[in-house]
Length: 378
Image 1 (spheres, rainbow, N blue to C red):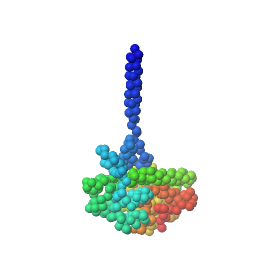
Image 2: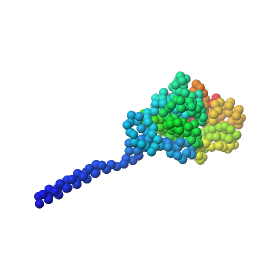
Image 3: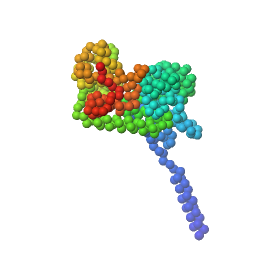
Image 4: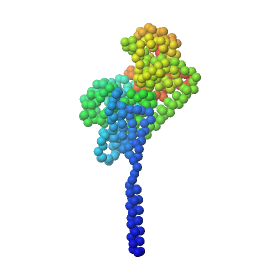
């Protein structure tokens, strides 16, 4: 009897131990964690310890989603991935838009850039020095890259962009075995969404924490400026854009990122209720009827002087903001080779763009602030 009891006890112990072993083996799947808050065109996912960079909007009307597994160069991981693998940190990179330059610079990685198309438009002094010293090679134009020169550079990665379809030169480069990733920062619909693409570069240079920290400062500054603007009791009316061709006035649509700037500056943009996330194409007559008495005219196309405006169309002189000298443009502030600073840096620093607009329209709110991008049109 005692033997039977001992046997039963032994079986119970073995059963309990076995159950405990099974319980230890069971692990719950960790939910995918995203670090992206505002941007819609890309994501960074931590999928149970596997980091993935996902490009959701490579170019306009793109239906394809591109996924990349991010691995450290020091990793011994040899598991085959269903996605393309990008080893980081990247040491030799080609970027193709001036909007990429400030983000790379903020991460102190400008010396990693080995090639850039039509570098004349680069305004940043730090990167211009590298171009002038021949450390960054000219690789053609944005929409016509010189693939021969680019392949000779042997970059680890090309960060490209395309307007409406896969770029042929980038496809050639990819077939040659060089990683290509599309950057769609320009398609973002909010100012902070554009700026958040610094996290894209943070992953590539293995500087995620630094990128997160930089973006957090920009985000906080932007939100603080927005709250400051909300204190103003004034609500000046705003006109924007200009006629650029065929008597059609182009100006920001109501859901565009430019309209968002004006909204966050607590301004009454006269086309704030219009539909669309890009630009509106309107007749001169319709804009004149609605905007002739606007208090401010911000960003009048590519015009940089009132004289240019009048040469283009004498009727501009009938606008109130023209006669009260309340036209402000970003096109007059340029780098030493002619690149407009706003088009390069504005996407990365929306906090400064917002402060500029607040300073223009409610100067008492920022008494000691000096305009960075905009200037009164003369």
